[in-house]
Length: 338
Image 1 (tube, rainbow, N blue to C red):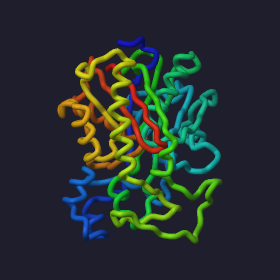
Image 2: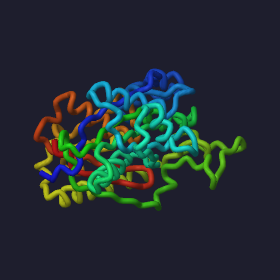
Image 3: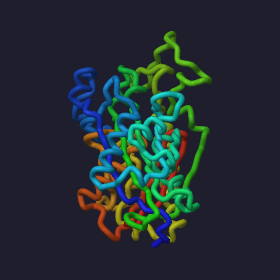
């Protein structure tokens, strides 16, 4: 058991009310049956933000739920980290907007981090570091994304995968909750172009005059929308995640059979099952929860943690290995000691 430098003391999440079911997708793409979509990605429904609903809106709702459900007074928050790749604006930071909406104290810092599928782990590492340094005692980490706004209407593949959500996690120095173990991080920027929204920022501005492309699976996209090279991302995942798990175990001086629950980034069910078998994780120790919400990017791990606790898959005394991986390429993980 590590020294309780930083602990996760509360988790909550929020879904927007909009929905995109497999039945909806089948109407738009008749060649994709409801059963085929479910078998391919393991998702039956995705929650979708409204046209006038953005990352800050989801973030505020998730934090308010955390405060209400856990009797947390916002005045104790002394730092806010918002992880998002779909910010409200280029500037100011979405965290500043969320800070104001939540009425956090003026002495609380607020910052955005631009990170995707490994974003929860990266944010957790930053929160732990601030607590370890004595610069904060209660860090509110919010992950919030509206990837649906990046998806081309004819991109049936990505629309079947991604959903919108926000999750709020309170990381504290009080020793109550799940202690955060030693952490592993990694980056390989050579894969940046394999999961990208190319247009919209300074290097490549958004354009009304842009060609529409189709990939080998018949998914349409252009450079104003998200592009994912699924085959390359899958290969990266199969290469990086088994090694990541080994490194996490080694750094925390644990054997694989000492882990009670494994929670990976909820990319899609096919990929997760492939990884589970490759790493030889027993099915009863491998937690998947994405069928009714889809891949919510940086929020998948905290949402799964919340549900695993609620479903009694995580109990007091359990060691839980978490691993995030994807866009960047980036990856990271740790062990949580409940």
